[in-house]
Amino acid sequence: MNRCNTSYPLLAALIIFGACASLHSLSASAQTEEAKPNIRNFPKTAFRGQLQITGAPDALMDGKTDRLSPGSTIRDINNMLVLPGAVSGTKLVVNYTRDNTGLVQRVWILNPEEIKQKLPSQLAAAANDNGILSNIRSLFEPTPAPQDDGKTPYNKLPKYGQ
Image 1 (cartoon, rainbow, N blue to C red):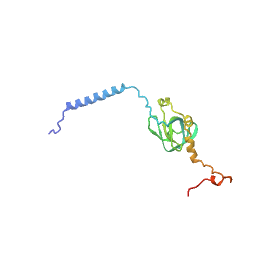
Image 2: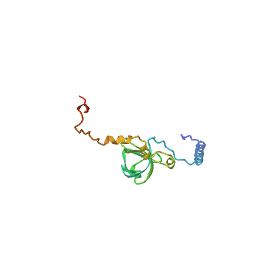
Image 3: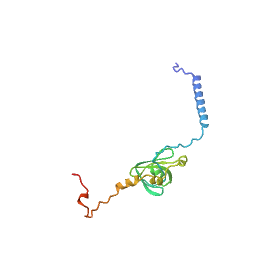
Image 4: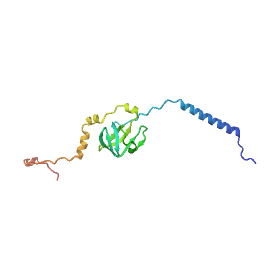
C-alpha cells in the first residue's frame, strides 16, 4: 500500500527553480561596484592624533606619554571594538576624545577616507580652550594659604559666618 503520494515532476520543477534563483543572485552580485569605506560621524570634541599603545593603559599620543581611561574603547576601521593588546606597538592615526580628568576615553582608528577629513589638532584645541583645561588642573593643585603680615587693620580682616 503506497501512502506517500508525491509528484516527482513538481519536485523536479522546484529544484530547477531554486537553482535558477541562486544563479541569478550570483550574477547580480558580480555587477556591484567596489564598496567604499564608510565615513563615520565623530563628536565635535574629537581630536586627531597618532596613538601607540605601549602597554595598556599606558600609551603615546603624538609622541608624548598618555593614559587610557578605565573603560576606554578602541574601534577599528570597521567600527568593531578592539582590545588594546591587539594594537600594541603599532602607530595608528586616530580620532579620540578625553574624559573630564584628561585621560583618553574613546578612540577610533581611521580609514584612508577619514584621514582626509580635517579635524582640529590637540595643540589648536588647547590654544582655543579659554583656560578650561587649566581650570581643571587648578582643582587638583594646592592653593597657597593667605599670609598675614600683622599689619592688616582689624576691619579689613576676613569675616567668618557664625
